[in-house]
Image (cartoon, rainbow, N blue to C red; front, side, top):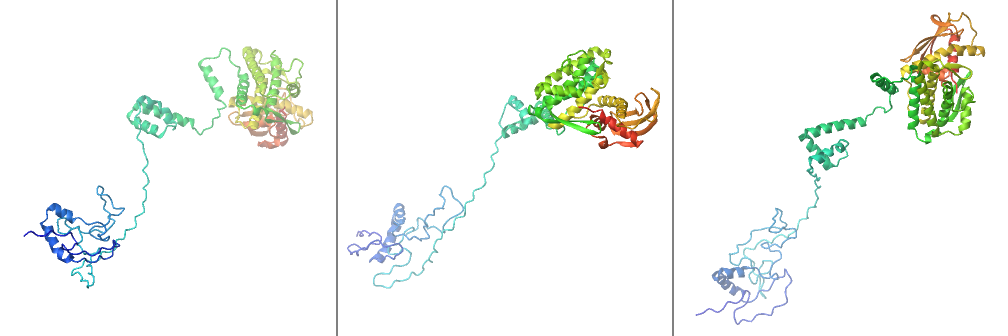
Length: 526
């Protein structure tokens, strides 16, 4: 006898009336048990066991979400932070449990008449029977607070050294030595040097050259550099027309002053320069510009040009006194500037050339300064001394380093001043500015004298006759001694310091010492 067809799950037997279904219940509300559900359950189980595997799988799938419990531990809802299956991560956002076997009967579905939370549904008008072995209520799922995302610091991007050809790397060695290459170029050069000996040697030489460019030493040239270079050149190949020794100081000092004038700017030519000299018993000064100083040197050097038969820059009727010539030059030029450099430079070159060609024939030529006269060989040393002193004045005005002359040239200047002291002392005595003569002797005989000791490489010992310019100063007749530094003595002779300011070691006759120091200061002039 054929069996009747089974009703769908949760339906009654054939021919049984089905109660009216209310609207969809809210999730979590118990669903009332339908009649015939208990009777149909065994048949369902038997049928499910006899069904084919495909049917079992189909019927084993969970029913729509309306009958599924939201808190069912067997099927947790996917969380937003739960990773995809293709990228598993160790962290699981929700609770996990053993999943039911897919082949087990009734796996993955809720029997009809069972409420969504898993408890028995009470029938209408009957007392609900508790489940003999109820499952414990699952704990509500609480999603853990996500950990704050901390962005890791990006690793520094270190680009590999570019592969450059050998020619390019060799061309970069100069820039690498100066530390002006880019980071990539520096890495490429430094990677190449250990493998290329010629490039490594060249890089070492370039680095040493760069070290010389950054030297902490002074950049000012040595005062003796020019004379040493000239001497070295002349030693290898003597000049056809050598410069006389007595003209060498003037040649060197005019060259140094010309270098200073070449270095200063146009605005420096209007810088105020203080000219100082000692007149009678007090120090005198006067202010002018750099151009005014050069005009003064040109005017006084014109006395030597006239003595050698050259053109006088002030004309044939110009005065002989240096101060008067200077005033006339300033009045004629007005406000001298850089334009006065070339005439002065050309005149000094012409003087040296003429003296060199003439040689010994003109060494004793007299040069008149108005109140006194000097032979040409002494006059050129005198002009060298004044060129150095006024170059020093200009250097102070424009903040330019200006060392003293070489020791050999400075010695010639000191020697000329020491030889002029007896005549200067006699002139002050005639003017009533020095003490009377105490021991007059026959000209050429030893007389009372002062021992002048000049310290330093340019120094020496001189014995100054005190009572007569014609007398002979000697060690045996010395009644006093004065010791001075070479540059200090030159500053006293130039009128830059007074006799009282001269740091002198003194011993012996105080009156003789004072007379000689004031006579040295009186040698200065504008």
